[in-house]
Length: 156
Length: 348
Image 1 (spheres, each protein chain N blue to C red):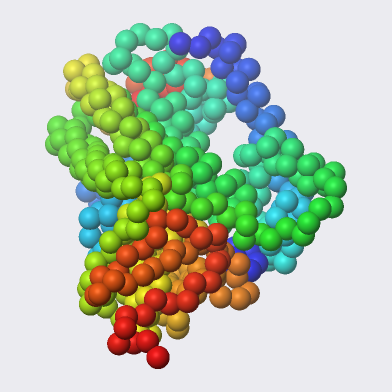
Image 2 (tube, one colour):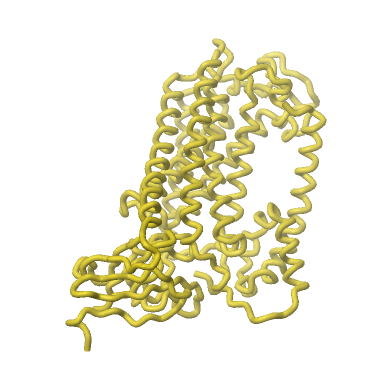
């Protein structure tokens, strides 16, 4: 299990990544999308809003691609249709990978269910504990009429 | 199609589909909360988060069932038409579940909510207290990545292969959600039937995907067995109805759709350039082969989308010996025009 310090570091890193991503996402929707894909030059405002979350998620890759598009020497005019992948060569690999994934996941899911049901020990009167008020109140004060929190995450 | 990007390329059929999906989702949440509040002494917030959670899981099972079912029966193909909108609605319901759960269970402590979720179950004290919330969080991250990249812009710019690989992560998300449920709500004092329902759902989805996968694997193996240099027999010319196609497997694992149109025969790739839809299951509308999945169109004699669109797919040469059609296994470059092959009685 990760240590609390590692978890705190991961959370702070994720927040920083997301904040930078949101800033980049707005800029990408405004200019970057059209820079890497000519079809986006006449895109609607609705499209630009919709593309922000994906750009925020993938911003390091898109930043690199945007930079390459801006700095690339002008070559032969691009025919966007030529960039459309032909699915056939990849499709068999994709199908095989999907089958392999399912064959690998089924025993994992089955094991998870078996383990979960074997350790299941619901205590009378503790469930559904969520139907009561939150166990931990603001400022860390603990409610006296709610079940004690299980771990840092509060009640299950 | 692809001449310019819009937020949503709605048409009448898609609006109807989306209307039904949103209507059912809203009715589920409102009905769940209303019935729950009238039956049990439970907080409306708890009822709402359970409504969102169960609704998202149910939608995910439907989404995961559509693909393999469509491989077994063409009657399921219409449900593929706007499946990505179904996925976005499912993600929004999962997000509602996560937001309310986080607010309710982690929003009032000394730790910030995200840290609180990830620290649940630390230190590890056995599977009975396995932190199920991080499992749900991991699934939500995958569903977010899929919803955020569902637009055609991402399909084109991530490449079909990368995009599809990313979206195959939905299987992992499904496994995470099953574990989230098994180590979460099933650990509570709930009706034992819920466990059997979960097992049945997992068995249904897994069996469908494995059956469809094995079927596809066998078909691919048959295609590989074909000689690379031999023309492939399609069948008798009378087998193919006007405006319809027959699917043929040729070398290099390629599917070819042989269409009959205006008395002649033309062969194009059987795989749509958009999302790999089965063109042989489509039909010819206004002289264009129309993909049954999302309506992408190609001129039947050259594999080129009609202007102003620019998708192109490979074409194949045909020949007729007697009444039997044969197709060349060698693909012509995408967009290559090939005159229709006509049986003797149809030749001028």
